[in-house]
Image (cartoon, rainbow, N blue to C red; front, top):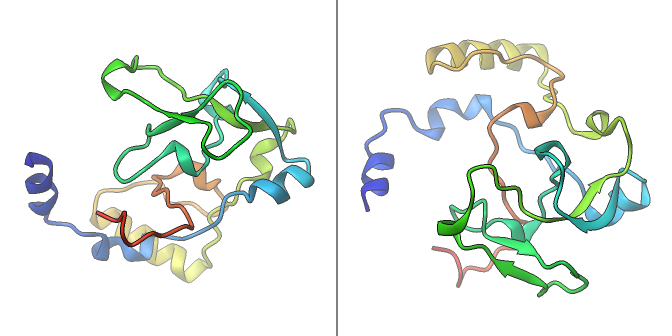
Length: 156
């Protein structure tokens, strides 16, 4: 409950920084595999640079929700992660790994036009965010992960 009070007490809102946001689709599992960008390989990644999140990995307010089982061939082959037992350096098992050495070039970039970039940089300084530059991979910025599926009955 304290978290809700802390969030509610913030002076800045998302509306204050709406010009600093962009929406993009990272990878489509089927197309990225057929294009040779990612490959199916259920394993623990060696580093966070190899971790490719999929929908079951996260849930409302929880970026460590489920992890694929060692053998993961069906959508139900995931186990819920016990957050109390996680080590500080935990990386979830993943079903996909980068399939190319230059994986970073396939990550979408921040592609604002010059006028939006100038507005974003000005707004960023007003709210204390520095370093808004064009053509940076979106992975360099804060993220809000969302799944395409929306079930109103499960929404909290």
